[in-house]
Image (cartoon, rainbow, N blue to C red; front, side, top):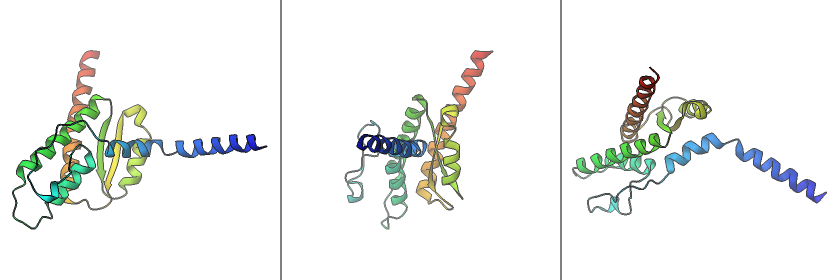
Amino acid sequence: MKQIILVFTILISNWTFSQNDTISLALKVYNRRFELSEPVLPDYPMFKGLELNAIWECLITLEIMYHVKEDIDFTAVRTQIFDRLKQIATILANEGTFFYLSSGYDCYNSSTEKNKNYLITKELYQCVGDCRTSLGYSEGKDIVNKTTREIQNKLAYQRTKKEK
């Protein structure tokens, strides 16, 4: 009897955890730490400990820069973050995942629905803000999406060119 209960418990737990695979995959990519070079950041307390090797970390840093009250020129840091986001999108595309950030009304449900086709499309969506998206997040989202779309279009063009 104990064995039957144990087997039944294991089956239910495996079934329950497998329900969220596509959701957790997008979140894992969003949180994934990439092997990127050490960032060159100004010596300000807000940059202490930042590695800027995850998408979320880049987006948050972009957002923080919009809220700094001091008159500081962040142009070099912003450029570096944009380059990192492009690198991350390129790495993911080369690994076979076209990763897109989404926002807007009901983006969580929309992203979840699109992720159901991941095995077919190789497109993975992560919602970064329902309704209104802040400037830093919106800016980073645009960089990731543009880079991913360009790579995806280039690969599609190469495939169609080979087929002819």
